Length: 287
Ligand code: ATR
Image 1 (spheres, rainbow, N blue to C red):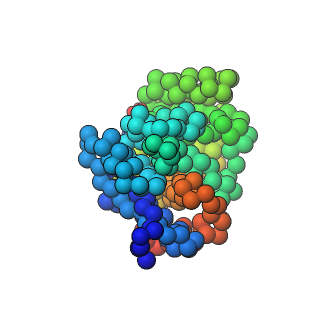
Image 2: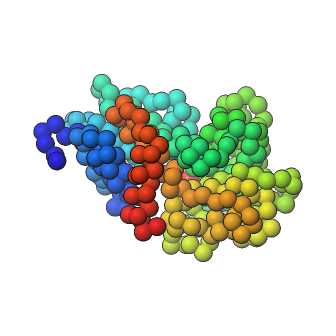
Image 3: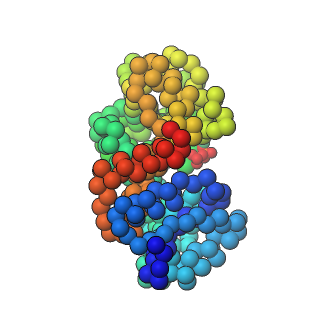
């Protein structure tokens, strides 16, 4: 029931038409009995600053930010949480005096998804496929959660090296190493927690996979694909065929929303409530 006390939240991006975030937040608020509504805002290129100022003027309490504005928005904030600053991407804004404070809940979201799946980063040998913005954030997360070793495997080695250099400088050792994608046979003969952080295999290119050689998957103990559409990517199928466990990006999407909700509403969402939303997400997506 919307009334005079309803608080407004939303998502800024372009496009936003296929977002599942309103479903997450509006169901959470109804489960938790909060008087709020969450809506998508399609923001045209070149109008981000106006959108942020307008949102503040309209007393919008919290905003999620998605592609292509996660980095651009940083220059428009009143304050930024250190993790988001280090990652260089903000996906959550919380209203403070005079503007918004930026957070990154994507990586804490991935961490909570892994905890929920019983997957441990601490002491793990981690392989990251890709060296774009997502891979950079994932490398930061893995380094900050005490992985034993991290190898970034990318088609363009220089891009992997840039991330490795930056993260190694941040943590003060040489934890992160790099390898050209085509050289995966140089990996040591062991099993890795593998994160697929490229857009290869994203719908409508469901038949594509970053490494289309079954051999490679013998190195994968647990494979996380950051993609949620399709829900079962070819990468995940190849991981399972080689005997590994495979997960998609859906739980990360769930928990990035839950963490944003917790920041905005100064509350903690119980695991059973999270799972309730997860089931709703899956049925909404026809899974
Ligand atoms: P994002 O910021 O979402 O991570 P991005 O910056 O476009 O996206 O990064 C995409 C990553 O996927 C890159 O590491 C890219 O490899 P290159 O650095 O060599 O460009 C990788 N990628 C995309 N398509 C690929 C393909 N067909 N084969 C191998 N790697 C691919």
